Length: 289
Length: 174
Image (tube, rainbow over all chains, first blue to last red; front, side):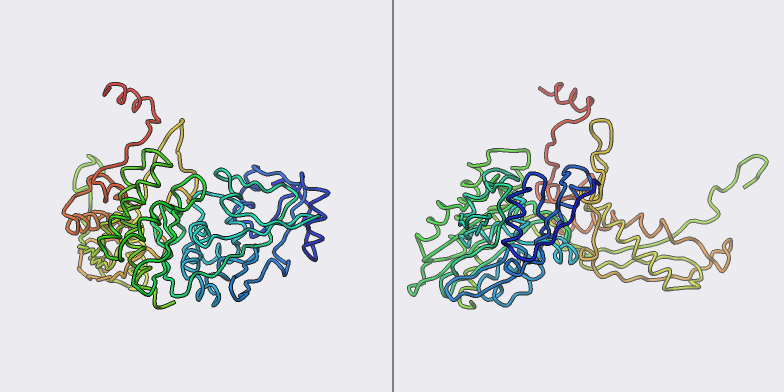
């Protein structure tokens, strides 16, 4: 591993002004579960490592009434244990708890999971379903970006080297919503998702689905919702038959984007079944929220 | 064994064991989960039964990997998996409940009737698990590991050929 200078800024302004001057030679450390491996393998050779884990503004989960803010350096363990997250967005809790092992969850951050921009990032499906806005800072200004505009291709974001992801904010789901996150992995821990799904549904007084959000994981090259499938879900009252048909539609919509691959004979029917199960669970949980 | 002729009985004793696996198969995904496992072995006199149990439970864990996860794949002149992030082995969360039955038979050749309990604990685990999967699904996986795709589809996902021999096979087909 190359030697580097390890920098711990006192606050976010200092972190941004450091980046403004030395962005080319600096990597941001936010957990390091991917970065440290890349350093050891020599894939990355930064001269400076800017550790943002100590910045208070980045370490908070805040309930702001109508919306929730999650700092980018909040760990997966903290998200999994957070009362706010469990109450407002149970599927984000489930996704965070499904990652790696306790050691990895203690270090890994939600900002890192996002900025690494892996197609199989476990928190991406629920964050997409939540219509998150990413708060971005540099030395001069602060911006907000939608996730679909932040991640432009696998492992690639639009962030410049001078920018820091401060955190994510999202409006709370409609009252009475139910959510579900399901993940297929090859084993029960330390497993990268083979395919995953996050759904949230809200049911109106007449018993129909008034809002549906469906976001797959480990399937699409860049995160996206399945909008046509969501529309189809609202056409008739919820039933197992509807969920089954919608599962099939979801698979058609997703695989129209990715095309046929070697894994498609497995992934397509499994994804359809997963969508069906997730919808069924989410609808059952609707009153509980 | 006669040291002069090199002839005789190659093993002074054979090992005897019986194992039973109970699995749950998610038919929507092909995921197999080991629920319960009983492993009975004749080890002779168990001087330290806890050590014997540990050996047997470790064997079940290794056999579970053989059955469901582990596979050596080569390509480009070497092994394709160079670390345990790709070559998957079972984690503690994947282990089912294991019951160890120690049978204290008396093999006249071994000290205190001892036979052996190292490899014997591993060898019949995969067959027991694969038999349980076949019993649950009505379909038999005939080459290991019984991964998600093989259990769900009944056959392996077609892979891109990586070895010259595989390439020529593919060419021959078309």
